[in-house]
Amino acid sequence: MRPYAAIIAVLLSLLVIGVTYLLAFQGPSQPPPAGSGAIAVDANNNVGIGTTSPTVKFDVAGVARTREYLKSDKLGGEGRTGVVLADDAGECSRTIGGKTVKISRALPPTTWEGSAAACPTDWWVCSAADRGTIACGDGTVVQIDRCRPTYHDDSGNIVKGRLNGVNVDQAWVTDAVFSSGAFRGQFINTKGKSMVETELTDCVVYPTWCCAYK
Image (cartoon, rainbow, N blue to C red; front, side, top):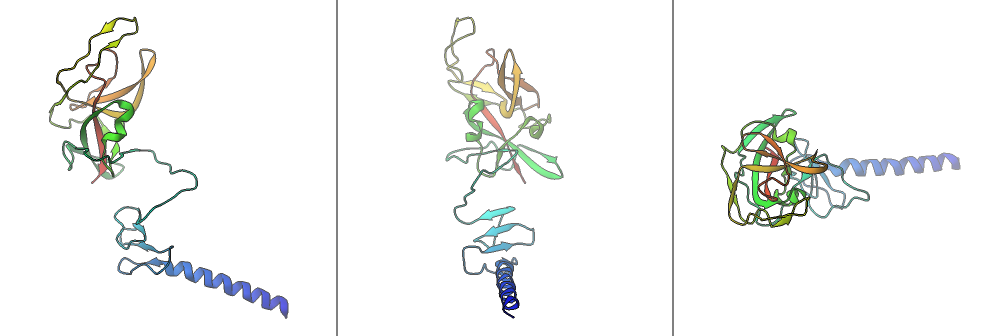
């Protein structure tokens, strides 16, 4: 009978583990149970760990860690202090994949490489496909000071920088374009026209197009 007793003990242990995990999943009106593995799922199927009020699909109230890396197809905004959008509600909006996406320029000018620093938390740097070709921003311009320092061109000539205020209606998107023998950042103006950074570009720093779900 001893083998049967061992099997029964194992089955009981598995049952206890299964019930423990089931009890960890709580409905939207229930507080998470005691313990570090508390999970709550609300009516919108948002999952919260340590919170009964998740606001996004996966909401962790505390420090999260991954043993490998988090994969995303978007360049998320870094949420730096002092970041300002032209319009928090979006200068325009588009429907992408059945979801409404609001689009606005982040006003701190950055280089193309630093564009993620310009977008707030919960926003991402728009790709050219996200931004689209629609008019956005009503053609309003942003004034940038010291937008291009003095530099040497490819022939070694000194090109005087543009230090005074320059009015621009372009903003960065994530895309890189191979142009004039090098990969260069792409930007799109408020009318939806795409351009590529070159030595003839007015500035080396621009606002950034940021996107977020409404």
